[in-house]
Amino acid sequence: MDTRWNIATVEHPTADTIIYLLLQVAHILAHLKEWGSLSHQAFDNTFVERLWRTVKYEDIFIRDYPSVPALTHGLEAYFRFYNHERYHQSLDYAVPAAVHFAVKEPELGAS
Image 1 (spheres, rainbow, N blue to C red):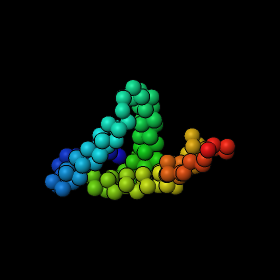
Image 2: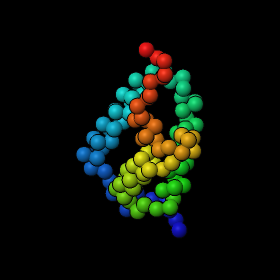
Image 3: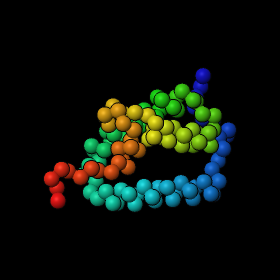
Image 4: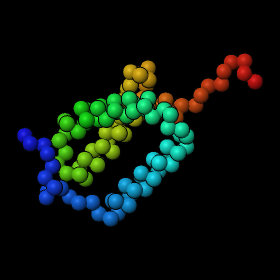
């Protein structure tokens, strides 16, 4: 099966979709600015590459989305699953949301 997209059959984004995506990019850039120096960029690239490999093999290649809106909806669902239901070996078999939002316990003897 040829899985390349034919530009004539792909739904083109609306102005609202483009504005939404630009706002999302601005939000991400704001977080990157908070991150500070990009000295961690090479190290972070490993995690990003691993994430996209996982997304491709666990979702995109399996589902073979027929359109951009279907892909967008599918990725939203997959990332909800990835962050809230999928256990990660690197997190001692916890889910990312639980680790990220966990309240750090105070150390014993700390005043």
